Every structure is written in C-alpha cells, then in structure tokens.
Length: 227
Image (cartoon, rainbow, N blue to C red; front, side):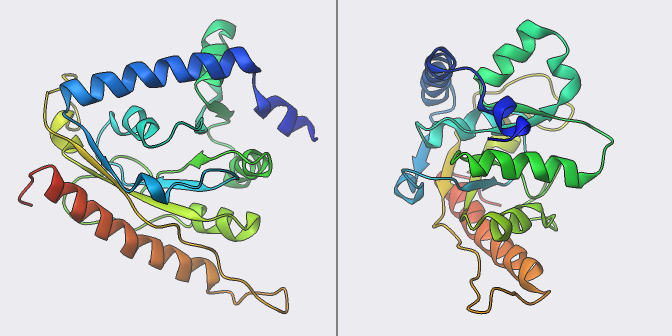
C-alpha cells in the first residue's frame, strides 16, 4: 500500500460507524423535510469501486447523494480544511480526502485513483461547480479518465428539486420536494490490444452527458418540476 493509500484509508470501524450515524440522520431529515424519493438504487454496485457522477445544482447535493447507498462514499475536499486536526478527522470519517487547491489536476486524479484502488466508491461532480438550468452543462473529462484508467464503472445520478431548495447565493434551505434518480452503470471501453483510441475519454464523457440528461429529466419529473 502506497503512502497516499495509507493516508486515504482513514480511521477504522469508529469512523465508519460515525459515517453511518450521520448518513442515517441525513436520510431521516431528507425524507421528512424534502419528502425525498430515491429511484434506481438497484443500479448501485454492491461491492468494488465505482464513480458516482451526480449533476450539481445546489449545496445540498453532496449530503443528499449519500442517501443513495449504505456504502461510505469518498469526496474530494480542500486540503486547508484538514489543517485543524479535529475538523480533518471528522471530514475523513465522513469520506472526505484532501486535495491541494492550485496544484496540477494530475495530483488530484492520482489521489482519486488511490481511492478507487482501495475498492471504495468515489463521488465526482462532472459539471464541476454548481450550475443552473434544465440542461446538462459541458462536462469535465475527469470522471471518464478515471473510469478508463481504473476500469471501474460510472454511475450517473440526477437530482430533481434541489435547485429550488438552496439556489445559488441563498443561505436558506427550503422544504421543497426532491427526487434522486440513479442510472445504470456506464462501463469503460475495453481493448483486446490494450490500447484505446485517443477519443475514448471524450466518447465516454459524451455518453455520461447523455445519461445524466436522462436521469436529470426523470428526477425533475418525479419531483413535480415542469421544466
């Protein structure tokens, strides 16, 4: 196990119990406050690594996505948050791992690959920052690159209603009805020769974009949104 992998493993059973407790509280809150419905849970792999790729429309997307599976999900976070040890310990227990802001993207991708090599699920928002509107914005290639590099599937996730819960610039969390739709896993391409065409990453990103639009539209419909 590499030094990076050792760091990313996090604490043992205690941290996982803490994660389960926090996730349970979030699940209850979401069901009551957002009347949250989750559809397509059967599409979540029960074992092994995968990349969970949700759309991003609200600050509540990150805690809500934890409801889709009992497995502990891993998230990237600014390394400065880990400078205060108690805060860092909590973040690590909740599945976070530090990435240095301002460094090359390659370093962040290496840490993501280390997480996946440990067999753990990784959350990546392929749209990057929070977006708005009914259409999927152009995606970054990071999720597709990691999928091809590690050989793990990408699971698309759509949210409905979260944009109205906490719009950009808002500090209030409104009790809007929300839905989550989990799409079927998208598996990376394979090659008998061991070499893939240069377009493999962009093609996989395009497939992910199409799948995200489908689950996004389904989630909005289930949440009662008209646009």
